[in-house]
Length: 198
Image (tube, rainbow, N blue to C red):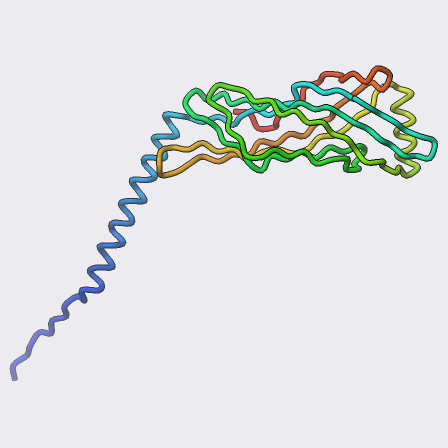
């Protein structure tokens, strides 16, 4: 009895799917190579955010435990990259006293050219802040010691574009204390820079 070998032909749909997958794989690999080469050429470094200057414009504390203050804070953003502009967005800093929020400082999206710096001046005026007994003691002590401390906490998201296929994204974070002398309202300079530096 004759035996016939069965032949199974591959569906055209499967061939088309395989070709499409192969093309996608090649594009992904090529894009990865371009981004990697771009990174090696540009080698982007995370910008440095720091407090360039500050001033205690106004400080009032009455016997009822209500604190009012106004500060000027200048944030400096440095882009040390020699081959790429840096774009910044979601820039936000929270200013507080003894954990009590005073103000939120924000900036719209902006760009810093390569090897340049940008200054962000903020004038912060708080609403009257009622203090509990422990905070009243903290203010009393600060005035007697002639040093009052505020905290600033925040940062910005940064990115560099590498051709049409990709970009590098980083985050800059700033967490530090700002010290002032209530007697003459001057800022006591200290090292206040972002935690990520490359």
